[in-house]
Length: 172
Image 1 (cartoon, rainbow, N blue to C red):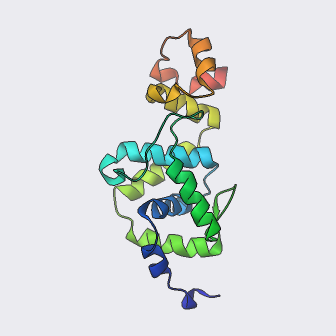
Image 2: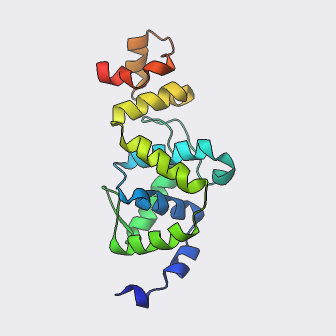
Image 3: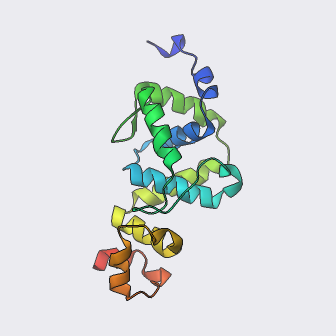
């Protein structure tokens, strides 16, 4: 089926805002999102930076790997079942790329640069570095994490200085 036979604009209009944001995030910069943890953290950081744009879209809770939104997992399942993304590698399919192009036309600043910046930041970190950063900057999310005991062990329960957030994992 060619792009001429499909009304991608209509498909985008029928999507929830959260699904459009996820597809935009997956396609932004032309680089894949590394994992579901990375996707969760990109969208978490973006929602912190732009609370007025993300209000009511994703609700993040404490989880074993930091802030987690069930809505993201549900939407990834929906767009995967629609054939727009493959799991578990979170790559857009050819049709997903067409949907992304339609969404990309509509995305404005500051959402565009915020997601791109957060995707670039997250993609440059290992999962351990990313989680250390999240727990140091947003300590309320460490409570139910699998990382909590390790961090408490190395810091004897004291908060980690923010300047050591990334180097913590590289030296442990």
